[in-house]
Amino acid sequence: MLMVSVVAYTAYLVVVLGSVGDGPLAEAPYVSPLLWSVGGAIVAGVVLNIMAGAVVPKGARRKDQRDREINQFGEFVGQSFTVIGGVTAMAMALVEFDYFWIANVIYLGFVLSAILGSIAKIFAYRRGFHPW
Image (cartoon, rainbow, N blue to C red; front, side, top):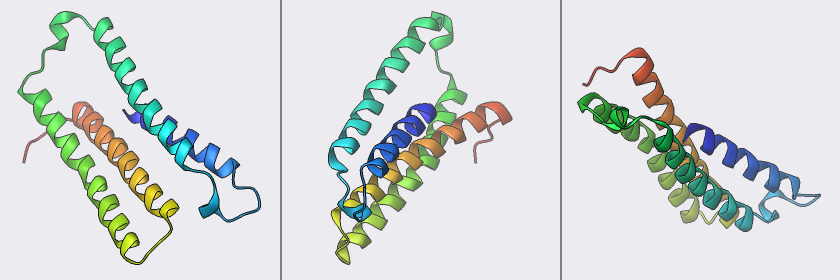
């Protein structure tokens, strides 16, 4: 998820920033690139998950209590950015920001959530995990 999120969001930024031209950023065409980026990330995540499942031996696929706790911890940590993005987007909507900015804040919140959650899981596996 870490790599998929970073690559998809970087591609989205390159496309949107490359299409700005001389006008303001908020007028850049963003809807289609955003939808393609999100859809591509979902498909890539599913395909990579299937490929990883096919390569990993059957005995290694079982998850124990530690695996479940690390996954839960990573999801919990990552969800903070989903909430931050949602609250920020709501505040932006209340003061009537342009749709471009609201959509991009929500998307950035999702991306940061995936990145932070993945980093937390990797860190917990590499450095050890101590449940609260």
